[in-house]
Image (cartoon, rainbow, N blue to C red; front, side, top):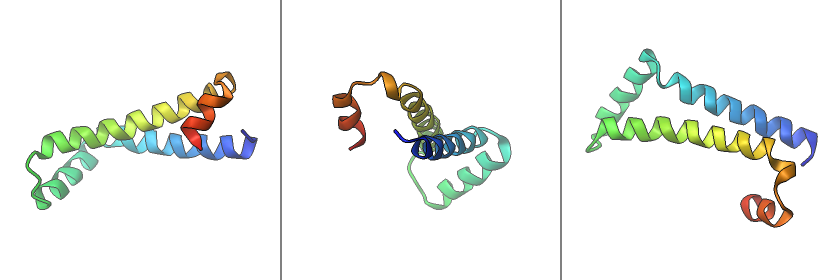
Length: 82
């Protein structure tokens, strides 16, 4: 992986992680709950939890792949990213 690709991937993953962690705080949590209520989803609490956990897990997995990129075999790396 080129350094520019790694830097860009890491930056995006950090922003996603930051936003995922910010959704755990009160102002954003209330805003998202209101949007989910307007959408009339059957389970707003579960949807909020899934959105938060998906953001955080995606960012953590992306950072883990970025850090462990050189240790992955070529076959695994090509399967995951191409």
